[in-house]
Length: 375
Image (tube, rainbow, N blue to C red; front, top):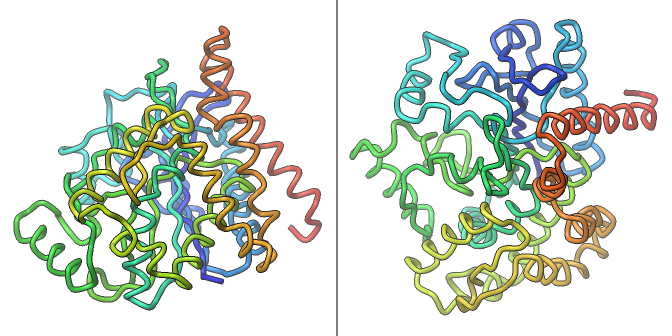
Protein backbone atom coordinates (compact mmCIF):
# COMPACT_ATOMS: atom_id res chain seq x y z
CA UNK A 1 0.00 0.00 0.00
CA UNK A 2 1.20 3.50 -0.85
CA UNK A 3 1.10 6.61 1.29
CA UNK A 4 -1.72 8.85 0.08
CA UNK A 5 -2.51 12.49 0.73
CA UNK A 6 -4.81 15.18 -0.64
CA UNK A 7 -4.77 18.87 -1.41
CA UNK A 8 -8.38 20.02 -1.32
CA UNK A 9 -9.40 23.38 -2.78
CA UNK A 10 -12.84 24.72 -1.87
CA UNK A 11 -15.04 27.70 -2.68
CA UNK A 12 -16.79 29.60 0.10
CA UNK A 13 -19.98 31.62 -0.24
CA UNK A 14 -23.57 32.20 0.77
CA UNK A 15 -26.34 29.64 1.11
CA UNK A 16 -27.77 31.18 -2.06
CA UNK A 17 -24.67 29.96 -3.92
CA UNK A 18 -22.89 33.30 -4.36
CA UNK A 19 -19.09 33.16 -4.01
CA UNK A 20 -17.72 35.16 -1.08
CA UNK A 21 -13.98 35.36 -0.43
CA UNK A 22 -12.77 34.93 3.15
CA UNK A 23 -9.44 33.13 2.73
CA UNK A 24 -7.34 35.76 4.54
CA UNK A 25 -9.64 35.76 7.56
CA UNK A 26 -9.85 31.95 7.65
CA UNK A 27 -6.08 31.44 7.51
CA UNK A 28 -5.60 34.00 10.29
CA UNK A 29 -7.72 31.85 12.61
CA UNK A 30 -7.42 28.27 11.31
CA UNK A 31 -3.89 26.93 10.91
CA UNK A 32 -5.11 23.93 8.88
CA UNK A 33 -5.84 26.14 5.85
CA UNK A 34 -3.73 27.97 3.29
CA UNK A 35 -4.53 30.76 0.86
CA UNK A 36 -4.92 30.50 -2.88
CA UNK A 37 -4.22 33.67 -4.94
CA UNK A 38 -7.94 34.55 -5.05
CA UNK A 39 -9.85 35.13 -1.78
CA UNK A 40 -12.74 32.96 -2.88
CA UNK A 41 -10.62 29.81 -2.66
CA UNK A 42 -9.31 28.08 0.43
CA UNK A 43 -7.16 24.94 0.62
CA UNK A 44 -6.33 22.25 3.16
CA UNK A 45 -3.77 19.47 2.95
CA UNK A 46 -4.09 16.07 4.62
CA UNK A 47 -1.26 14.18 6.32
CA UNK A 48 -0.21 11.21 4.15
CA UNK A 49 -1.38 7.78 5.32
CA UNK A 50 -1.78 4.30 3.88
CA UNK A 51 -5.18 3.63 5.48
CA UNK A 52 -8.36 4.65 3.68
CA UNK A 53 -10.23 4.77 7.00
CA UNK A 54 -7.70 7.28 8.35
CA UNK A 55 -7.86 9.26 5.12
CA UNK A 56 -11.63 9.50 5.36
CA UNK A 57 -11.31 11.17 8.75
CA UNK A 58 -8.53 13.40 7.44
CA UNK A 59 -10.73 14.62 4.60
CA UNK A 60 -13.80 15.29 6.75
CA UNK A 61 -12.23 16.93 9.81
CA UNK A 62 -10.92 20.15 8.19
CA UNK A 63 -14.13 20.54 6.22
CA UNK A 64 -16.13 20.36 9.44
CA UNK A 65 -13.78 22.83 11.15
CA UNK A 66 -14.13 25.26 8.23
CA UNK A 67 -17.91 24.88 8.26
CA UNK A 68 -18.08 25.84 11.93
CA UNK A 69 -16.05 28.98 11.21
CA UNK A 70 -18.22 29.83 8.19
CA UNK A 71 -21.43 29.31 10.18
CA UNK A 72 -20.52 32.29 12.34
CA UNK A 73 -20.38 34.42 9.17
CA UNK A 74 -23.61 32.91 7.79
CA UNK A 75 -21.53 31.39 4.98
CA UNK A 76 -20.98 27.85 3.73
CA UNK A 77 -18.86 25.61 1.47
CA UNK A 78 -19.91 25.61 -2.18
CA UNK A 79 -19.90 22.54 -4.44
CA UNK A 80 -18.48 22.66 -7.96
CA UNK A 81 -15.08 23.52 -9.42
CA UNK A 82 -15.73 26.86 -11.10
CA UNK A 83 -17.31 30.20 -10.21
CA UNK A 84 -20.77 28.78 -10.92
CA UNK A 85 -22.53 31.98 -9.81
CA UNK A 86 -19.42 34.09 -9.24
CA UNK A 87 -17.97 37.12 -10.98
CA UNK A 88 -15.20 36.20 -13.43
CA UNK A 89 -14.44 39.84 -14.28
CA UNK A 90 -12.65 40.57 -11.01
CA UNK A 91 -9.72 38.92 -9.23
CA UNK A 92 -10.03 39.09 -5.45
CA UNK A 93 -6.47 38.98 -4.13
CA UNK A 94 -5.88 37.08 -0.90
CA UNK A 95 -2.36 38.48 -0.42
CA UNK A 96 -1.48 41.78 -2.08
CA UNK A 97 2.20 41.42 -1.07
CA UNK A 98 2.79 38.05 -2.73
CA UNK A 99 4.74 38.57 -5.98
CA UNK A 100 3.86 35.11 -7.33
CA UNK A 101 0.17 35.89 -6.81
CA UNK A 102 0.73 39.14 -8.73
CA UNK A 103 2.24 37.18 -11.61
CA UNK A 104 -0.71 34.74 -11.63
CA UNK A 105 -3.32 37.52 -11.58
CA UNK A 106 -1.59 39.45 -14.37
CA UNK A 107 -1.02 36.48 -16.67
CA UNK A 108 -4.04 34.24 -16.05
CA UNK A 109 -6.75 36.24 -14.30
CA UNK A 110 -9.75 34.31 -13.05
CA UNK A 111 -9.04 31.33 -15.32
CA UNK A 112 -7.12 29.93 -12.34
CA UNK A 113 -9.93 30.58 -9.85
CA UNK A 114 -11.12 26.99 -9.63
CA UNK A 115 -11.54 24.32 -6.96
CA UNK A 116 -10.06 20.87 -7.35
CA UNK A 117 -8.60 17.82 -5.68
CA UNK A 118 -4.92 16.94 -5.99
CA UNK A 119 -4.20 13.31 -5.11
CA UNK A 120 -0.65 12.50 -3.99
CA UNK A 121 0.73 8.94 -3.85
CA UNK A 122 4.09 8.23 -2.27
CA UNK A 123 6.61 6.58 -4.63
CA UNK A 124 10.26 6.92 -3.64
CA UNK A 125 11.70 4.57 -6.26
CA UNK A 126 12.44 6.99 -9.11
CA UNK A 127 12.22 4.38 -11.86
CA UNK A 128 8.76 3.33 -10.66
CA UNK A 129 7.75 6.96 -10.15
CA UNK A 130 8.40 7.88 -13.78
CA UNK A 131 6.75 4.69 -15.05
CA UNK A 132 3.70 5.60 -12.94
CA UNK A 133 3.74 9.17 -14.25
CA UNK A 134 3.62 7.84 -17.81
CA UNK A 135 0.73 5.46 -17.12
CA UNK A 136 -1.30 7.99 -15.14
CA UNK A 137 -0.69 10.75 -17.69
CA UNK A 138 -2.14 8.46 -20.37
CA UNK A 139 -5.19 7.56 -18.24
CA UNK A 140 -5.80 10.86 -16.43
CA UNK A 141 -8.76 11.65 -18.66
CA UNK A 142 -10.66 8.73 -17.11
CA UNK A 143 -10.21 10.12 -13.61
CA UNK A 144 -11.29 13.57 -14.76
CA UNK A 145 -14.44 12.00 -16.25
CA UNK A 146 -15.32 10.38 -12.93
CA UNK A 147 -14.80 13.64 -11.02
CA UNK A 148 -16.28 16.23 -13.42
CA UNK A 149 -18.25 18.82 -11.44
CA UNK A 150 -17.90 22.15 -13.26
CA UNK A 151 -20.53 22.59 -15.99
CA UNK A 152 -21.43 26.17 -14.95
CA UNK A 153 -19.63 29.51 -15.02
CA UNK A 154 -20.96 32.91 -13.98
CA UNK A 155 -24.58 31.78 -14.05
CA UNK A 156 -24.47 29.93 -17.37
CA UNK A 157 -24.04 26.34 -18.58
CA UNK A 158 -20.81 26.31 -20.59
CA UNK A 159 -21.57 23.14 -22.57
CA UNK A 160 -18.61 21.36 -20.96
CA UNK A 161 -18.60 18.87 -18.11
CA UNK A 162 -15.30 20.18 -16.71
CA UNK A 163 -15.17 23.86 -17.52
CA UNK A 164 -12.36 24.03 -14.95
CA UNK A 165 -10.00 21.87 -17.01
CA UNK A 166 -10.87 23.67 -20.23
CA UNK A 167 -10.15 27.13 -18.83
CA UNK A 168 -7.25 26.32 -16.51
CA UNK A 169 -3.95 27.33 -18.19
CA UNK A 170 -1.87 24.21 -18.76
CA UNK A 171 1.74 25.40 -18.32
CA UNK A 172 4.02 24.95 -20.17
CA UNK A 173 1.72 24.26 -23.09
CA UNK A 174 3.69 21.22 -24.28
CA UNK A 175 4.95 18.79 -21.63
CA UNK A 176 6.75 15.66 -22.83
CA UNK A 177 6.39 12.10 -21.64
CA UNK A 178 9.40 11.91 -19.35
CA UNK A 179 11.77 9.00 -19.95
CA UNK A 180 13.40 9.21 -16.53
CA UNK A 181 14.42 11.57 -13.74
CA UNK A 182 17.38 13.01 -15.65
CA UNK A 183 15.12 13.88 -18.60
CA UNK A 184 12.68 15.62 -16.23
CA UNK A 185 15.40 17.63 -14.45
CA UNK A 186 16.97 18.78 -17.72
CA UNK A 187 13.58 19.79 -19.15
CA UNK A 188 12.58 21.71 -16.00
CA UNK A 189 15.88 23.60 -15.96
CA UNK A 190 15.43 24.47 -19.64
CA UNK A 191 11.91 25.82 -19.01
CA UNK A 192 13.17 27.96 -16.12
CA UNK A 193 16.06 29.30 -18.21
CA UNK A 194 13.68 30.20 -21.05
CA UNK A 195 11.12 31.82 -18.74
CA UNK A 196 8.41 29.29 -19.65
CA UNK A 197 8.11 28.52 -15.94
CA UNK A 198 8.48 31.09 -13.14
CA UNK A 199 9.61 28.54 -10.55
CA UNK A 200 9.72 24.79 -10.05
CA UNK A 201 6.05 24.80 -8.91
CA UNK A 202 4.91 26.40 -12.17
CA UNK A 203 4.27 23.05 -13.89
CA UNK A 204 0.50 22.91 -14.30
CA UNK A 205 -0.28 19.64 -16.01
CA UNK A 206 -2.59 16.68 -15.41
CA UNK A 207 0.00 14.80 -13.37
CA UNK A 208 3.48 15.69 -12.19
CA UNK A 209 6.27 14.43 -9.92
CA UNK A 210 6.47 16.13 -6.55
CA UNK A 211 8.78 16.13 -3.58
CA UNK A 212 10.61 18.18 -0.97
CA UNK A 213 13.15 19.69 -3.38
CA UNK A 214 11.79 19.70 -6.92
CA UNK A 215 13.09 18.85 -9.45
CA UNK A 216 15.96 17.00 -7.77
CA UNK A 217 14.43 15.29 -4.71
CA UNK A 218 11.13 13.58 -5.54
CA UNK A 219 9.01 11.17 -3.52
CA UNK A 220 5.48 11.22 -4.88
CA UNK A 221 3.14 11.39 -7.86
CA UNK A 222 0.62 14.24 -7.86
CA UNK A 223 -2.57 13.86 -9.90
CA UNK A 224 -3.89 17.36 -10.57
CA UNK A 225 -6.61 16.83 -13.15
CA UNK A 226 -9.61 15.97 -10.95
CA UNK A 227 -12.44 18.43 -10.34
CA UNK A 228 -13.62 18.93 -6.77
CA UNK A 229 -15.18 15.69 -5.50
CA UNK A 230 -17.39 16.54 -2.53
CA UNK A 231 -18.51 12.92 -2.05
CA UNK A 232 -15.66 11.56 0.08
CA UNK A 233 -16.47 7.91 -0.68
CA UNK A 234 -16.20 8.63 -4.41
CA UNK A 235 -12.92 10.48 -3.89
CA UNK A 236 -11.52 7.49 -2.02
CA UNK A 237 -12.78 5.18 -4.80
CA UNK A 238 -10.96 7.23 -7.44
CA UNK A 239 -7.84 7.17 -5.26
CA UNK A 240 -8.12 3.41 -4.80
CA UNK A 241 -8.40 2.88 -8.57
CA UNK A 242 -5.33 5.06 -9.08
CA UNK A 243 -3.36 3.18 -6.41
CA UNK A 244 -4.34 -0.22 -7.78
CA UNK A 245 -3.22 0.78 -11.28
CA UNK A 246 0.17 1.78 -9.90
CA UNK A 247 0.49 -1.43 -7.85
CA UNK A 248 -0.33 -3.49 -10.96
CA UNK A 249 2.26 -1.46 -12.88
CA UNK A 250 4.85 -2.18 -10.19
CA UNK A 251 4.36 -5.94 -10.66
CA UNK A 252 4.39 -5.81 -14.47
CA UNK A 253 6.19 -2.82 -15.97
CA UNK A 254 6.22 -4.28 -19.48
CA UNK A 255 2.42 -4.59 -19.54
CA UNK A 256 1.49 -1.23 -18.05
CA UNK A 257 4.26 1.31 -18.80
CA UNK A 258 3.27 3.08 -22.04
CA UNK A 259 6.92 3.33 -23.08
CA UNK A 260 7.07 -0.50 -22.98
CA UNK A 261 3.54 -1.47 -24.02
CA UNK A 262 2.39 1.14 -26.54
CA UNK A 263 2.86 1.22 -30.30
CA UNK A 264 2.99 5.02 -30.06
CA UNK A 265 6.08 7.24 -29.79
CA UNK A 266 6.72 9.50 -26.79
CA UNK A 267 5.53 12.50 -28.80
CA UNK A 268 2.39 10.69 -29.95
CA UNK A 269 1.62 9.58 -26.38
CA UNK A 270 1.92 13.15 -25.05
CA UNK A 271 -0.39 14.47 -27.76
CA UNK A 272 -2.89 11.63 -27.29
CA UNK A 273 -3.02 12.13 -23.51
CA UNK A 274 -3.56 15.88 -23.77
CA UNK A 275 -6.24 15.44 -26.42
CA UNK A 276 -8.03 12.85 -24.29
CA UNK A 277 -7.98 15.24 -21.33
CA UNK A 278 -9.73 17.96 -23.33
CA UNK A 279 -12.25 15.56 -24.88
CA UNK A 280 -13.09 14.21 -21.41
CA UNK A 281 -13.44 17.78 -20.13
CA UNK A 282 -16.08 18.37 -22.79
CA UNK A 283 -18.22 15.23 -22.40
CA UNK A 284 -16.68 13.12 -19.58
CA UNK A 285 -18.15 9.62 -19.46
CA UNK A 286 -19.74 9.98 -22.90
CA UNK A 287 -16.38 10.86 -24.51
CA UNK A 288 -14.75 8.77 -27.22
CA UNK A 289 -11.07 8.63 -26.33
CA UNK A 290 -7.93 7.18 -27.90
CA UNK A 291 -6.35 4.25 -26.04
CA UNK A 292 -2.67 4.69 -25.28
CA UNK A 293 -1.81 1.13 -26.28
CA UNK A 294 -2.69 1.46 -29.95
CA UNK A 295 -4.52 4.76 -30.50
CA UNK A 296 -7.85 3.02 -31.19
CA UNK A 297 -11.05 4.79 -30.16
CA UNK A 298 -12.75 3.64 -26.98
CA UNK A 299 -15.73 4.97 -25.06
CA UNK A 300 -14.73 6.49 -21.72
CA UNK A 301 -17.22 4.40 -19.72
CA UNK A 302 -16.03 1.20 -21.40
CA UNK A 303 -12.38 2.05 -20.70
CA UNK A 304 -13.10 2.65 -17.01
CA UNK A 305 -14.95 -0.69 -16.87
CA UNK A 306 -11.86 -2.35 -18.38
CA UNK A 307 -9.70 -0.79 -15.68
CA UNK A 308 -12.06 -1.96 -12.94
CA UNK A 309 -11.97 -5.52 -14.27
CA UNK A 310 -8.21 -5.39 -14.51
CA UNK A 311 -7.68 -4.25 -10.90
CA UNK A 312 -10.42 -6.42 -9.33
CA UNK A 313 -8.20 -9.45 -8.45
CA UNK A 314 -5.68 -7.22 -6.65
CA UNK A 315 -8.47 -5.17 -5.06
CA UNK A 316 -9.97 -8.35 -3.56
CA UNK A 317 -6.55 -9.56 -2.43
CA UNK A 318 -5.89 -6.25 -0.62
CA UNK A 319 -9.45 -5.97 0.74
CA UNK A 320 -10.04 -2.84 -1.38
CA UNK A 321 -12.86 -4.09 -3.59
CA UNK A 322 -15.65 -2.36 -1.62
CA UNK A 323 -13.76 0.92 -1.86
CA UNK A 324 -14.29 0.90 -5.64
CA UNK A 325 -18.08 0.55 -5.55
CA UNK A 326 -18.92 4.30 -5.78
CA UNK A 327 -17.35 4.27 -9.25
CA UNK A 328 -19.99 1.76 -10.39
CA UNK A 329 -22.66 4.20 -9.24
CA UNK A 330 -21.10 7.02 -11.27
CA UNK A 331 -20.91 4.81 -14.37
CA UNK A 332 -24.63 4.04 -13.97
CA UNK A 333 -26.01 7.39 -12.82
CA UNK A 334 -23.49 9.89 -14.17
CA UNK A 335 -20.99 12.19 -12.49
CA UNK A 336 -21.90 15.43 -10.70
CA UNK A 337 -21.83 17.51 -13.90
CA UNK A 338 -24.04 15.08 -15.80
CA UNK A 339 -26.59 14.94 -12.97
CA UNK A 340 -26.65 18.75 -12.75
CA UNK A 341 -26.93 19.22 -16.51
CA UNK A 342 -29.77 16.72 -16.73
CA UNK A 343 -31.73 18.70 -14.10
CA UNK A 344 -30.77 22.00 -15.73
CA UNK A 345 -32.12 20.78 -19.08
CA UNK A 346 -35.45 20.13 -17.33
CA UNK A 347 -35.70 23.69 -16.06
CA UNK A 348 -34.02 23.54 -12.65
CA UNK A 349 -32.00 26.73 -12.02
CA UNK A 350 -28.25 26.73 -11.39
CA UNK A 351 -28.88 28.39 -8.05
CA UNK A 352 -31.24 25.58 -6.99
CA UNK A 353 -28.70 22.96 -8.05
CA UNK A 354 -25.89 24.63 -6.07
CA UNK A 355 -28.17 24.96 -3.05
CA UNK A 356 -29.03 21.27 -3.27
CA UNK A 357 -25.30 20.49 -3.49
CA UNK A 358 -24.69 22.56 -0.34
CA UNK A 359 -27.33 20.53 1.50
CA UNK A 360 -25.87 17.23 0.26
CA UNK A 361 -22.40 18.18 1.56
CA UNK A 362 -23.83 19.08 4.96
CA UNK A 363 -25.82 15.86 5.10
CA UNK A 364 -22.75 13.79 4.23
CA UNK A 365 -20.77 15.45 7.03
CA UNK A 366 -23.59 14.98 9.55
CA UNK A 367 -23.89 11.29 8.64
CA UNK A 368 -20.16 10.87 9.13
CA UNK A 369 -20.29 12.57 12.55
CA UNK A 370 -23.16 10.34 13.67
CA UNK A 371 -21.28 7.22 12.61
CA UNK A 372 -18.07 8.27 14.35
CA UNK A 373 -18.71 9.10 17.98
CA UNK A 374 -15.06 10.03 18.55
CA UNK A 375 -15.26 12.77 15.85
